[in-house]
Image (cartoon, rainbow, N blue to C red; front, side, top):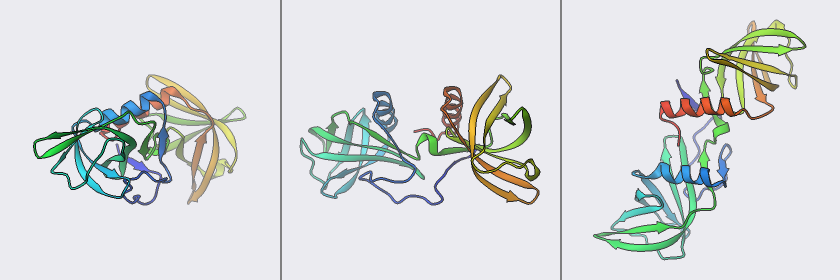
Length: 227
Protein backbone atom coordinates (compact mmCIF):
# COMPACT_ATOMS: atom_id res chain seq x y z
CA UNK A 1 0.00 0.00 0.00
CA UNK A 2 1.37 3.36 -0.97
CA UNK A 3 0.89 6.66 0.82
CA UNK A 4 0.92 9.85 -1.23
CA UNK A 5 0.26 13.51 -0.48
CA UNK A 6 -2.26 15.71 -2.27
CA UNK A 7 0.48 18.25 -2.96
CA UNK A 8 2.07 17.79 -6.37
CA UNK A 9 5.56 18.78 -5.21
CA UNK A 10 7.64 18.28 -2.09
CA UNK A 11 7.53 21.37 0.14
CA UNK A 12 10.75 23.19 0.97
CA UNK A 13 12.42 22.42 4.28
CA UNK A 14 10.73 24.73 6.76
CA UNK A 15 12.35 24.70 10.21
CA UNK A 16 10.27 27.63 11.38
CA UNK A 17 6.97 25.95 10.54
CA UNK A 18 5.70 28.64 8.23
CA UNK A 19 2.32 27.96 6.68
CA UNK A 20 2.30 25.31 3.95
CA UNK A 21 -0.69 24.08 2.00
CA UNK A 22 -1.71 20.70 3.37
CA UNK A 23 -0.49 21.11 6.95
CA UNK A 24 -2.56 20.18 9.97
CA UNK A 25 -2.12 22.24 13.14
CA UNK A 26 -3.34 20.56 16.32
CA UNK A 27 -3.97 22.26 19.65
CA UNK A 28 -5.42 19.39 21.66
CA UNK A 29 -3.19 17.77 24.26
CA UNK A 30 -3.46 14.29 22.74
CA UNK A 31 -2.32 15.58 19.35
CA UNK A 32 0.59 17.48 20.89
CA UNK A 33 1.61 14.41 22.88
CA UNK A 34 1.53 12.36 19.69
CA UNK A 35 3.94 14.80 18.02
CA UNK A 36 6.25 14.89 21.03
CA UNK A 37 6.30 11.10 21.48
CA UNK A 38 6.98 10.46 17.78
CA UNK A 39 10.38 12.20 18.04
CA UNK A 40 11.85 10.20 20.92
CA UNK A 41 15.00 8.39 19.81
CA UNK A 42 15.22 10.25 16.50
CA UNK A 43 17.53 12.88 15.07
CA UNK A 44 15.65 16.13 14.49
CA UNK A 45 16.37 19.68 13.45
CA UNK A 46 16.37 22.40 16.12
CA UNK A 47 16.23 26.01 14.97
CA UNK A 48 16.62 29.18 16.99
CA UNK A 49 14.58 32.27 16.14
CA UNK A 50 17.78 34.05 15.14
CA UNK A 51 17.99 31.66 12.17
CA UNK A 52 20.60 29.24 13.47
CA UNK A 53 19.95 25.58 12.73
CA UNK A 54 21.53 22.39 14.05
CA UNK A 55 20.89 18.68 14.52
CA UNK A 56 19.71 17.32 17.86
CA UNK A 57 18.83 13.87 19.16
CA UNK A 58 15.58 13.51 21.05
CA UNK A 59 16.56 11.58 24.19
CA UNK A 60 13.17 11.83 25.86
CA UNK A 61 9.91 13.72 25.72
CA UNK A 62 10.83 17.39 25.10
CA UNK A 63 14.51 16.67 25.82
CA UNK A 64 17.10 17.13 23.05
CA UNK A 65 20.84 16.46 23.10
CA UNK A 66 23.00 18.71 20.93
CA UNK A 67 26.59 17.51 20.41
CA UNK A 68 29.25 20.27 20.64
CA UNK A 69 26.68 22.92 19.73
CA UNK A 70 27.65 25.87 17.61
CA UNK A 71 24.27 27.35 18.43
CA UNK A 72 23.88 28.91 21.88
CA UNK A 73 20.61 28.12 23.63
CA UNK A 74 19.32 30.14 26.57
CA UNK A 75 16.42 29.59 28.97
CA UNK A 76 13.44 31.50 27.64
CA UNK A 77 14.44 31.19 23.98
CA UNK A 78 11.84 30.00 21.50
CA UNK A 79 12.98 27.20 19.21
CA UNK A 80 11.40 25.18 16.41
CA UNK A 81 11.79 21.41 16.33
CA UNK A 82 11.11 19.46 13.13
CA UNK A 83 11.37 15.75 12.40
CA UNK A 84 11.47 15.05 8.66
CA UNK A 85 10.57 11.67 7.19
CA UNK A 86 10.82 12.02 3.44
CA UNK A 87 8.05 14.32 2.24
CA UNK A 88 6.41 14.25 5.68
CA UNK A 89 7.31 16.16 8.81
CA UNK A 90 6.09 16.80 12.30
CA UNK A 91 7.16 19.77 14.36
CA UNK A 92 6.38 22.40 16.96
CA UNK A 93 7.65 25.61 18.49
CA UNK A 94 8.40 25.65 22.20
CA UNK A 95 10.17 27.64 24.90
CA UNK A 96 13.50 26.48 26.36
CA UNK A 97 13.00 25.59 30.02
CA UNK A 98 16.52 24.39 30.86
CA UNK A 99 19.95 23.95 29.26
CA UNK A 100 22.14 21.31 30.94
CA UNK A 101 25.74 20.60 29.98
CA UNK A 102 26.42 16.94 29.29
CA UNK A 103 29.92 15.91 28.13
CA UNK A 104 30.82 17.82 24.99
CA UNK A 105 27.23 18.84 24.36
CA UNK A 106 24.13 20.19 26.00
CA UNK A 107 20.66 18.87 26.73
CA UNK A 108 17.96 21.35 25.80
CA UNK A 109 14.72 20.79 27.71
CA UNK A 110 11.52 22.41 26.48
CA UNK A 111 8.20 23.38 27.97
CA UNK A 112 5.11 21.73 26.49
CA UNK A 113 4.25 23.46 23.19
CA UNK A 114 0.84 25.02 22.61
CA UNK A 115 0.42 23.40 19.19
CA UNK A 116 2.04 20.92 16.83
CA UNK A 117 2.22 20.79 13.04
CA UNK A 118 1.92 17.74 10.79
CA UNK A 119 2.65 17.74 7.06
CA UNK A 120 0.78 16.42 5.29
CA UNK A 121 -2.14 16.58 7.72
CA UNK A 122 -4.31 13.54 8.28
CA UNK A 123 -6.95 14.82 5.89
CA UNK A 124 -4.26 15.36 3.26
CA UNK A 125 -2.76 11.86 3.37
CA UNK A 126 -4.17 9.69 0.63
CA UNK A 127 -3.93 5.91 0.49
CA UNK A 128 -3.81 4.18 -2.86
CA UNK A 129 -6.77 1.83 -3.02
CA UNK A 130 -9.76 1.76 -0.69
CA UNK A 131 -8.50 -0.40 2.19
CA UNK A 132 -10.03 -3.47 0.58
CA UNK A 133 -13.54 -2.03 0.42
CA UNK A 134 -15.92 -2.32 -2.52
CA UNK A 135 -17.41 1.05 -3.46
CA UNK A 136 -21.06 1.68 -4.25
CA UNK A 137 -22.53 5.10 -5.06
CA UNK A 138 -26.21 5.71 -4.26
CA UNK A 139 -28.33 8.56 -5.62
CA UNK A 140 -32.13 8.79 -5.70
CA UNK A 141 -32.46 5.06 -4.97
CA UNK A 142 -30.15 4.23 -7.87
CA UNK A 143 -26.87 2.49 -7.17
CA UNK A 144 -23.65 2.40 -9.17
CA UNK A 145 -20.69 0.12 -8.52
CA UNK A 146 -17.48 2.15 -8.79
CA UNK A 147 -13.78 1.28 -8.80
CA UNK A 148 -11.99 2.85 -5.86
CA UNK A 149 -8.75 4.64 -6.75
CA UNK A 150 -7.69 6.17 -3.44
CA UNK A 151 -9.11 7.27 -0.11
CA UNK A 152 -8.33 9.80 2.61
CA UNK A 153 -10.09 10.96 5.75
CA UNK A 154 -11.57 13.80 3.73
CA UNK A 155 -12.67 12.06 0.57
CA UNK A 156 -12.32 9.33 -2.02
CA UNK A 157 -11.34 9.00 -5.67
CA UNK A 158 -13.28 6.58 -7.86
CA UNK A 159 -13.71 5.64 -11.51
CA UNK A 160 -17.05 4.78 -13.02
CA UNK A 161 -18.74 4.59 -16.40
CA UNK A 162 -18.96 8.03 -18.00
CA UNK A 163 -22.53 7.24 -19.01
CA UNK A 164 -23.56 7.28 -15.33
CA UNK A 165 -23.70 11.06 -15.68
CA UNK A 166 -22.32 12.35 -12.39
CA UNK A 167 -21.74 16.12 -12.31
CA UNK A 168 -19.70 18.48 -10.14
CA UNK A 169 -21.61 19.50 -7.02
CA UNK A 170 -23.85 16.44 -6.99
CA UNK A 171 -24.44 14.98 -3.52
CA UNK A 172 -25.03 11.28 -2.89
CA UNK A 173 -24.05 8.47 -0.53
CA UNK A 174 -20.83 6.47 -0.76
CA UNK A 175 -21.06 2.95 0.64
CA UNK A 176 -17.71 1.35 1.53
CA UNK A 177 -18.34 -2.37 1.86
CA UNK A 178 -15.61 -3.95 3.97
CA UNK A 179 -15.60 -7.65 4.71
CA UNK A 180 -16.46 -6.92 8.35
CA UNK A 181 -19.01 -4.16 7.81
CA UNK A 182 -20.20 -1.25 5.66
CA UNK A 183 -19.58 2.48 6.12
CA UNK A 184 -22.01 4.90 4.47
CA UNK A 185 -20.93 8.52 4.04
CA UNK A 186 -22.57 11.49 2.32
CA UNK A 187 -20.28 12.97 -0.33
CA UNK A 188 -20.15 15.73 -2.92
CA UNK A 189 -18.50 15.59 -6.36
CA UNK A 190 -15.61 18.08 -6.35
CA UNK A 191 -13.84 17.04 -9.57
CA UNK A 192 -14.84 15.00 -12.62
CA UNK A 193 -12.39 14.08 -15.39
CA UNK A 194 -13.40 11.99 -18.39
CA UNK A 195 -10.87 9.22 -19.15
CA UNK A 196 -12.02 7.46 -22.29
CA UNK A 197 -15.20 5.58 -21.43
CA UNK A 198 -14.71 6.25 -17.71
CA UNK A 199 -14.97 9.31 -15.52
CA UNK A 200 -12.58 9.89 -12.61
CA UNK A 201 -14.50 11.46 -9.70
CA UNK A 202 -12.97 13.26 -6.74
CA UNK A 203 -15.49 13.09 -3.91
CA UNK A 204 -15.39 15.08 -0.67
CA UNK A 205 -17.07 13.56 2.39
CA UNK A 206 -19.63 15.86 3.96
CA UNK A 207 -18.87 14.67 7.49
CA UNK A 208 -16.13 12.98 9.49
CA UNK A 209 -16.38 9.28 10.17
CA UNK A 210 -14.45 7.95 13.17
CA UNK A 211 -14.43 4.38 11.93
CA UNK A 212 -12.94 5.36 8.56
CA UNK A 213 -10.34 7.51 10.31
CA UNK A 214 -9.44 4.56 12.55
CA UNK A 215 -8.98 2.31 9.53
CA UNK A 216 -6.79 4.87 7.76
CA UNK A 217 -4.66 5.47 10.85
CA UNK A 218 -4.18 1.72 11.26
CA UNK A 219 -3.12 1.43 7.61
CA UNK A 220 -0.65 4.31 8.02
CA UNK A 221 0.88 2.71 11.10
CA UNK A 222 1.26 -0.63 9.31
CA UNK A 223 2.91 1.13 6.38
CA UNK A 224 5.25 3.04 8.72
CA UNK A 225 4.04 6.48 7.58
CA UNK A 226 2.15 7.68 10.63
CA UNK A 227 3.93 10.39 12.60
